[in-house]
Length: 284
Image (cartoon, rainbow, N blue to C red):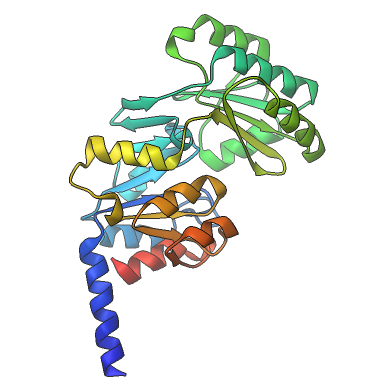
């Protein structure tokens, strides 16, 4: 028994000394049932205050800053829109967007199927009305959108194409209508990535993005001394699979999709039970 304890202590100590950076998804991974950072999570990250902490999310920048503030990591770079936008202190390290023609086609599909259509670029978020879906996102992200009819928003994106297209389009609504819209959007002659995060949610992004490639770029630009094999990353959903598989210490929370658990080196507790904090307490 004593020998086992010594060996386990040595293993944990080695892990502690090897990890150089922590990266985490937000929703379904880091946040608790109140969609914020629990006291235990904040304490765990305080304990790991010697390590850079990178938030990687489908969220817009403004929906991530208040979490950085709570973690005392506001100076850190962030990966937004699943990798379509990478920022370091407001400086763009990387940006790729959906072109206007695709924005218009998706918006028309949303109108045809009576779906809510949110359009995002940088820290801009446009909704056609404050309906159930917009209210829900406001509650989840603590960001207030700009409300205007879809034709006005399309005209704005068309007139400002020099600023880029949309970093993300989000469709929300009835699951049966979403089935039809998802199929129709998938048949468009364009290079888009369609991600059905829930039966009632479809997130649309530029095809070439990934959290993994965005994290690798961020590390190269901001933390050249960090090796990817010395990064611990936490996630729960399909868009986390490549990132979890690509780092040295991939950690899946208990509520993660089976595909995430299959590629993870470590499993931890449910996000509502502070799974990320538990892992940090144990290994950092």
